Amino acid sequence: MEEQNKLRNKKILITGGAGFIGYNLCDKLIEKDSEVVCLDNFATGKRENIQHFLSNDKFTLVEGDIRSLEDCKKAVKDVDYVLHQAALGSVPRSIKDPITSNDVNIGGFLNMLVASRDVGVKRFVYAASSSTYGDSESLPKVEDKIGKPLSPYAITKYVNELYADVFSKTYGLETIGLRYFNVFGRRQDPNGAYPAVIPKFVSLLMKGEAPIINGDGTYSRDFTYIDNVVQANILSLETEALNSINTVYNVTYGDRNTLLDLVAYLKEHLSEFDEKISHIIPKHGPNRQGDIPYSLSSIDKAKELLNYNPQFSLQSGLKEAVKWYWENL
Image (cartoon, rainbow, N blue to C red):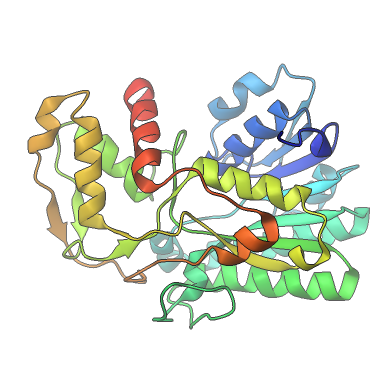
């Protein structure tokens, strides 16, 4: 039987709670009867994501910016745990504007650590990134073998890990970093300046347009359905084993698929709703600067120490995601 009660009535701050991953965490924790605080400045998060939570007395919205230490202090008041999701994602965005990515992802992260330390937060779980593996060519990716970062974004996420490690050793703040690999699923925005590949491709295919694959399509990714990510976050809050905290984990399914595979799967699932989609031929563009060519992770560490057991492969996750997009886009 699933342990429901560990997080009941615990006060949990989710930074970036109006974003794609943050929304799904809010939803799950409210279901678990936790008291949820959402901190968001709506730079990339959406008000409509959390609108239906506002009438729930278990949910509190703090509109603010992690770049403001005062906003962070306000948000962590009386909080037991922090799930830090707020960041400016996207490798291309960070290449175009490294200063803002640095201010949000490093300055904001440090503000949240300081605020959490000062009020005695029990545990600080944060969104780390597979981009930290950089130019390391070893496959599968294991947590203690990384390369040099390939983008400003990757640098910011690596610095987060370094800061978290220092805060756990220096101040006794429990930290867990979750290295997400290409997360996708419901509520992921297909629009905006820097959309993720799956919602972008889904949106184009639904319009009858050809998606543009960067490069020849043989670059591979370890795509991760949102429910796997939610599971890892919940487990990170609930774990009590000393050897499971103050470390980082890969969070993914542990399987590799090329971009060509991805398009084929999307066409297969979407053509169940509109047969014409099966005939769309993708186009090819140049490789994207700062991209890691091949990604495949080992999830052995998370399985052993967190009891992480991802339920959704790329195929089964896409089936769920495509249905959501078809009904909501």
